[in-house]
Length: 329
Image (tube, rainbow, N blue to C red):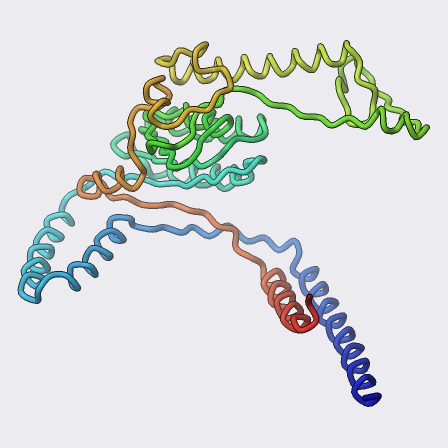
């Protein structure tokens, strides 16, 4: 039993040393390649081909051999005819929004890439999924979509799940908005929450000093005393932001009754249609399916290429996790 305990102690020490060495190696390699620049990778998917590919797989398994051969022959003829046609393009971009609208950088590059080749005969479809977030970052995201309209290229925003608050700020820039029946839209309002610990600090005799230059440099803070003057100014700033939000929606979607829908309420797809927040009840997949024969549909995505050091560090991390697996609770 004593030998077993000694062996386990030795094994644990050896494991700690190995993990430490691997961590140091990973850090050195990651630092050695830090600063090396690599452009994001452009990924394209021809949605028409994807739709046709899976349909053919189903036909092959459902049709009898003769019927499938006839279909193949017919499709080959159609393909030759289509190759001679110069179909308009539909460029598809996905935007998955978090509170910081972190994907706005990629969105900027994707829009720039598309506008280099798109014409007014084409169309850009942005599938927005976002419950909203920071005003300035979603304002920038909305500005990126406005570039499409300003370039004279038709813009459609498709909402399958949610485009509320900042998400709707983006959506309202489109020439056309489509949404699924129970997608959440609108929520044209502003929310601000600030916890305050001033009374707790005061209770424990902890002094907190905050120095500012300018009457309203800091209206409300986490640790400072909240004054009536500060609260009044903070409420004024929120209301001003709300007015800017409403005026932006009204400018780009004048058919809505902004006083009726700009209450901060979210609306499901069908109700959003009644309030003219959207133009049509339709999912993005349905929209693509309808236009698969008339448009060449291309999904555009830019993804950050991981550096060699980052890849190696990730592999080392996984190796360490696997090595420690027997010791996890």
